[in-house]
Length: 560
Image 1 (spheres, rainbow, N blue to C red):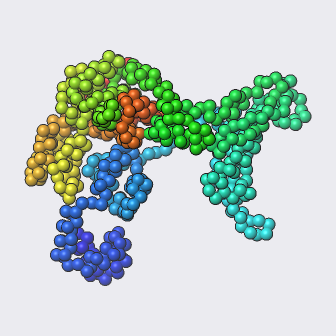
Image 2 (image 1 turned 135 degrees about the vertical axis):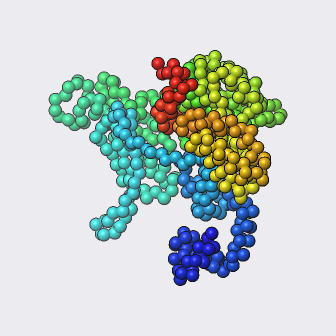
Image 3 (image 1 turned 180 degrees about the vertical axis):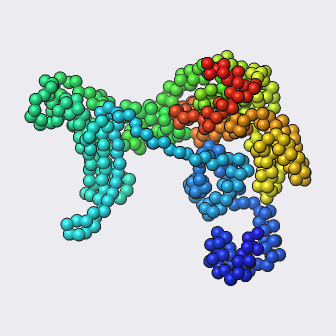
């Protein structure tokens, strides 16, 4: 107990600052406990236990962030809270303790992301450019210190470098920097285009040596390009036989030629049609109506239909199913719609969203229709299906895929059971539960569950949740640890829904296609993020599948 530790150190003649340093608490905390008696401390602690925590109103946000980004630190969570709720006053230590508790209760393990750096292939001339801003303090000849701003460029496949010093601009705002950019972009683009011409002809300007080609430079043509800083006029070099095809700024093309891609990209990130229209006008200086934005985003509908009906892999060792609820306007009323999402792990360890479906409610019959559809699209076998416990879903899945093992999400069971537990007992309750489903063997699991029942018998509602679903805990021990780690929770698909919520939170959608468009585009963004990656420890998962008596033949069938 903190009170006793403080009193003992005080009796040993420790100073207040030394006690604070030893126990890693603040000095005001030490002073407070030194002034209190044991009885006062006990009453104070009981009062704290019955009191709600400061971050409880933000609990759902914190859980959603941690499930989508398990690598987040408490400091990052603190920053995100202050960005979303500027009036919130909370210390870093409070957030750190609260995040730690959330991770323990919901079993959200902190993942360490190891970045792998490798050289990228050399790009063709003009295909890539590296740009960076900088500033430096230098001494003048009069020994006065001045600050210099600069911007540096390096063109791919070239030793040519370009730097512009910005002493004359002294930008103090974004607007100042935009004005500076207008003067910088022109000479920078022209220098890069000259470098491209040198590469095209095979010799430098004013080279007096023997040439390998009859082609020569032929002056310059003027061209106006649109940049984020506004319109800039540049001189584009020409050659006599007209064979020069610049890559940096292609012929007959300006920056706004890719406006459709930019609109679709902004829509995929959750911006409304009117927000996109305003943004385009701010950047490029011309307006795009929100009706035009709608027409542009409608161009993805054929791609959506093709994606929704595409052939699927013949085997998914792990599949996760869940529903997200959002709002659609029908005539003069709004209705809640369920978005059915299925995430699969392929035999190669890749993530694959099998499809998105809409229905007014979540039901067994709709799930059966969906399972029947994915079977007709080529899915022959599913080893494990993780779900949140919708009534009838287990029977519906087995009706289509008889050999599937259906697993109730343990994290959902934890959430369902702590509804019957006072907040002051969350930590010891979840710690006792972890000994059950995290036991090293089935025998140890049974023993831990007996102790759990006795310890928490005063909360029969919570214990009953686990009694009714204990078979789903027992079956975890039929498989190796790496398999259990994947199948025991639906966090994988819930993280997708967390990403979807970022683009659906603005309000009701006018019709189903509007909702499906934005979810499809968000799905394509996620697929880009996953491209080239693999599920962690997938090699160990495959080894455990291959040695399992009831699974090894099914696995080998799809490895051949």
